[in-house]
Length: 241
Image (cartoon, rainbow, N blue to C red):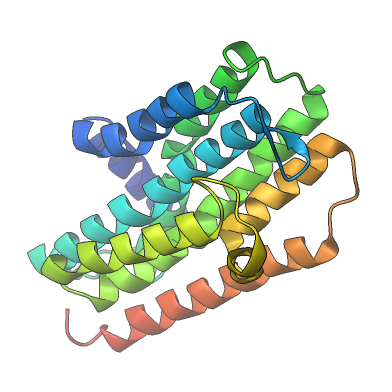
């Protein structure tokens, strides 16, 4: 486990110097919130400023875990970095675990900054325990998409993985209601997605209503599905990289 943590630490240090990564995962959701977040409306029963704070924090964390990770994994596979790691004493799952840990670490600044904007720019006032529950829910959501990033990063070459990641990104973001609230038939589709579940759990917490057990189970199921896909992708390419 110590080796896995060292690998994760090295990855975090490397990403700190990646300006493109932080522009996409941090600046984009922050700017969207600054321009859109102060609408005088309601969404899912809460003030729009609170909803958009939650959705932009989720968007930043989700995009950081998925799009950036998938591209790097595919490139590292092509460059032979994964093959080199297999020659070390690290356990076979160290690479996958380190990527998930890194996603959980590097998405914290994005989530924290957007939540702070919500508090001091959007005047969103919540009890401390609600802030913590929202933070943990978004944080857990990052593990789901970090696992998906491993799956597609292993499965597709670098020239294809970016397109695949972007299609998944837009699908989960739009249908899950991160850019704008969804309703009607689109909402029926969105209700099956983890992005929608994260936002809905957050709005239910803000309203002080009981969170549906189905939403929590749904997140766990999605994590299991994507972890399973990642495991299959790693095993299927074990002899080829």
